[in-house]
Amino acid sequence: MFLISSILFLMIIPACEDPYWPELGEKYDNLLVVEGRISNQPGPYTVKLSHSTTLLYPKYFPLEGFEVVIEDDEGNSETLSETESGVYQTAPNGIRGITGRSYRLLLNGPDNQSYISDFEILREPMPIDTIYTDIEYTNSDYHTFDIPGYRFFINTQTGIEDTTYIRWQLEETYEYTSDFKIYFYYDGVLHDFSDPDSLHTCWLTEPVYEIFTASTAGLNNPIIADYPLHYVSFEQREISIRYSLLIKQLTLSENAYTYWKDVADQNTSGGEFYTSLPYQIKGNVHNVNDGDEIVLGYFEVAGEDRLRVFINRPAPPQQMYYPICELTEGDYKEYGEMFRIKDWREWPRYVVVDLYGNRAVPQKFCSDCREKGGKIEKPDFWID
Image 1 (cartoon, helix red, strand yellow):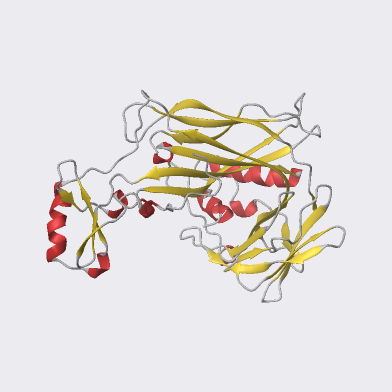
Image 2 (cartoon, helix red, strand yellow):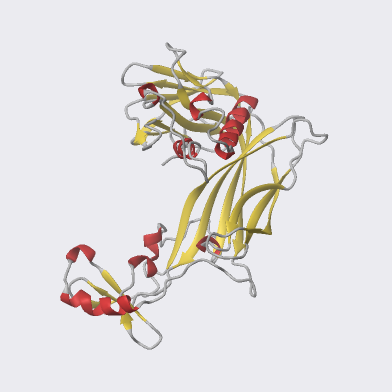
């Protein structure tokens, strides 16, 4: 599910309270949701279109067949191609965001409905200065003591303008291993597994869905210092070997900043129910012919600076607390059972060997790292 769709769902459910489901009516079940951005970074740029569903049972429904155009204030434009259902992209050598120019999004739907975003200026990006980590302790749901973890902090360089509006978008990638190596596999016949290391190490990349915003408004010096970002607990496998965080620092318009700040505030509000619903947080896209139609999401025009950092598993004597697979009596019994009950739907079955040479068949995610969502191909950007 994409960022805005995910956030809209999270905004409805208070973490520790029974959710209240308001009677909103069917008109809120099919709203256009827009997510896209153009920046000074090279394209291709992506716009994702979907429609909202019920709050109680949210799903992602992409919208196909739209004409999607990005244009600037000097008459340059590009029509995006639909690369997959509901996902529209510019060409790799297509339109490029240039600081100082203004951009907007135009949408024409298959039902002849037209939508447009407001022109926004692409501002000069505020540069990132440094990223660092510090150890913090948080409560644990599984232990009787607080668990440590790494908190990322960011420092910016001095902004060009006295007032700068910032949003940080984060993407994490981490290296991890399965808890056991595979030595045999069974597909009706038992075979040697020729390379036990081949499904042992994976890399997983996924977005960080937290929203981080800040402004230099009212500061004596237009600089953001020691701002706390993402937290990674030592209770998580993410930090088990090596971890990378890509930080995109987006310099926004005041309207875009207000939108994202409202979304972030909405997502962290408490009480019996929030003071406003996500449908009341207005983006910058509207129906050309129907000003009363509610459109969710935002088309961002952002000056972007980015930095990727890497950190290793903390050195001993620091302990890690993430769960690991342990072979059970049932896993050992399963090795014999798989020869007796031949269910091709479960093939291949992966066989591991313990320190004493005994064979067992644990759950697949214990021996095949891909089962936890990762890929065995090392990312091009990865630095060991």
